[in-house]
Length: 204
Ligand SMILES: NC(=O)c1ccc[n+]([C@@H]2O[C@H](COP(=O)([O-])OP(=O)(O)OC[C@H]3O[C@@H](n4cnc5c(N)ncnc54)[C@H](O)[C@@H]3O)[C@@H](O)[C@H]2O)c1
Image (cartoon, rainbow, N blue to C red; front, side):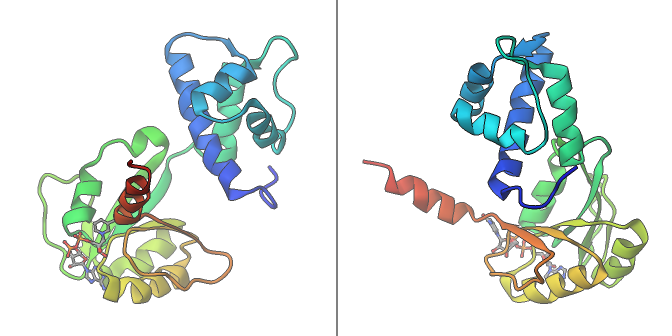
């Protein structure tokens, strides 16, 4: 599969298309037109066709896309066919809430372990909570490539450095720190305050 030169936003939109396709499959829909799929995903049909064109030829003119075929191709592209192991670091308020969320598996991710400087036992959580000192070895041994970062801002960069040294290539960063990472590492930062600020701009 070609992975280079594909815009990150296209990869992001593939996940949205995949969600729409899952709904169609649940409703036993076999084929979907690019117009209908684009509308469900909230994009223009030209955008959808352009995004899918990065991965090959899909759809038959006049008939649309085969829902099963397109869905399994997108799964393959996104690496969803097996559960992608993810670690979480920082089991505080936010980290434990994320660990309690059961929806990651459905989307193809498994939080295989969580790490904290102060690993308190939380009997209601299925994920093992381990000492941060065990993190690097765990990443290497289990070849984990993705991490969720939910530590305080002061600790974010040093934890990131250790993660990257051990082999993490993609970080979902909830800390407010701007992380300094090598070029091969991708960081997506989530900041609810920024999102709220953005929304508030549109309130009239
Ligand atoms: N992105 C958002 O919208 C959003 C929302 C809430 C919180 N946050 C951020 O998420 C982070 C966590 O917030 P919280 O409310 O859960 O904080 P918290 O204090 O409840 O939890 C932080 C956890 O990190 C652990 N920790 C500290 N240093 C560590 C280290 N070096 N290695 C491993 N673990 C370490 C602590 O022991 C604690 O369990 C903060 O950076 C906060 O600013 C972001």
